[in-house]
Length: 319
Image (spheres, rainbow, N blue to C red):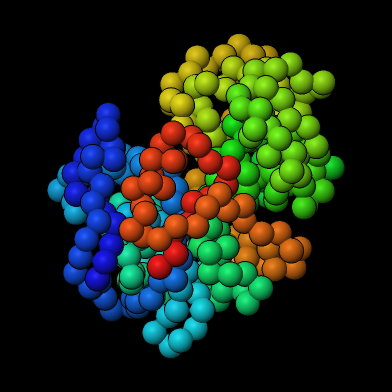
């Protein structure tokens, strides 16, 4: 079957390890099933995999792609939950899960094998392209906002780095749920796009805000961390799920303890949270923000666009 896969690891020039071509049909252990994919979405995780983060060379070649939607063996339209437990089944309490492309082949292919419990019905109101955007970036945003932040509708949140998949999802979800939403970006174009997506205000990165916010949604890391710490109110919360600009900023510990800030990590989300996210989109009319839809053959161009940061929302591969 045709697939897009990591054939080599290169920390400095990750796209050198990206290849397109024929790969074996997926193996199907007991309790697993296959999905004939119709759409799959690109994530920063796929770029990190090409750099060797979470993907050692001994597991190569590895088909990339965490997000997918398609048709199961019974003809049902389904969405794939990308999180798999250490035993190849559902995730148990206290277990560190992995996601597709770390131990198991991913969704940038004609077919993928996953545990049966990882399949959820695709709402008829969502296209395959829209549904394929949800299991990674949008699920991460959902968990950050509704599970980990401790905030409520009516609170003010700041979304750092408007433009990425998680950030754009946060803006749309928070506005639909009744939050006051502020966003930042270095790009005037991305600030304008954030306003179109529902942000009440958009500021240049590092700009002084009119007031401190209840929570900051942080996916950028080193480049925005100092601003995040300075922008959250007394006893407020910073929820962090990524560090695309670097993982080791100055910690600003004095401000953290003096103002009793909460720093909360967040990663992906559970199957139940994905089910709630699908329902949220269905009943509110919220739809994932799609930057562009391409074929799998055009994957290198999609990866290059993401690496350059030249996108707002998700890049989707139609299969």
